Image 1 (tube, helix red, strand yellow):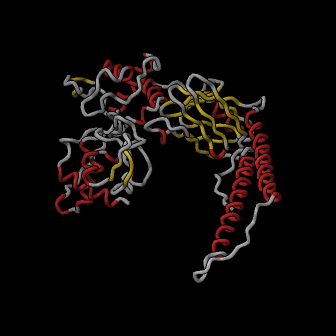
Image 2 (cartoon, helix red, strand yellow):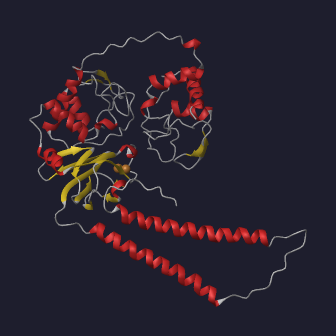
Image 3 (spheres, protein in one colour):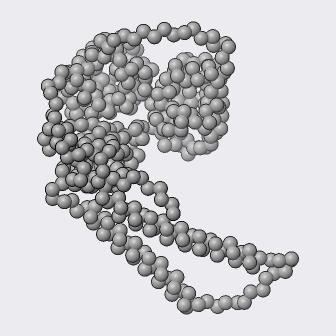
Length: 424
Ligand code: CUA
């Protein structure tokens, strides 16, 4: 009964699941028994035809008192003993375990093998061998959770923690960060790929040919999770896109002009607060990379950005659309896509950076300051024009959302509200 546990991919899975199932079964059994008895007695001894049901007066029973004290106590001790045995095997790492270093940061995981091989977002292990993960964090608390292996441990800044498991089957298994760690916590994912021992040997000994600066830069961008906030396809997520960034001209929010040359990019990486580009949140939500990237790393990243400028140009001809003939909800959807709301607000209920639009209209919940709100027309209008006026509980404050005041007309906002109403 009630078997909803994920795939079993390590030899811990069986013992973890059996104790979980045992506890579930005991709980279901006693819930049904007790609630069932309550319902039965309530019906059996109810007032019938205006006459109270006469019952005998019972003064207590030592026998029953002993039974319902001793039986649950024995069950709890039994469950605790099984739990301690299971936990002990999970903390005792076999001496021949393959060790991999894991570092968590806002918002990705990186992996380093004994021979120096490094990967991001995915790591490979051989099937049947014990794997020990030595885990730490560079910034805040994270937690490394591999449901299929039934292992989870916190990643703590300034401290090393560990977990181990022995994969029993090949395949790809999901890793989650399971400690709320900021805006992109839900996107802090990784994969463990379990392969045969021969395939693992081939993979781990391939430490890579000599890479060009641009390729190294691309790897650094992945390793440091720049992609959580900076796209390479021209769309604005939280920060500016890297596409055609190099050489771009524009304004800072203090009115100064800038040209995106080497020095601008270097300053933006090492000290993101020094200057913030107009239209982006101030203070910038970007972490400072001072001390985390060398000069060589930065020049490689710049080489990668330059390579994005050379990307083949795809010319897309936009068909002329007659806005007047569209329904308000369709126009709203168009604004949703064109104004890049799509970057932070999903339509399927999943959380990206901001709340999903699914079921948003009419929702009642709390702001971070504890006051209640109802997502009606005026709430949505304010959220678009002045995102920092109120921030919904559980979301970053100040909000990283750009201010749309002056960028959207009243009619466009009405269209967007009509569109949101249709997303249920
Ligand atoms: Cu890292 Cu949540």
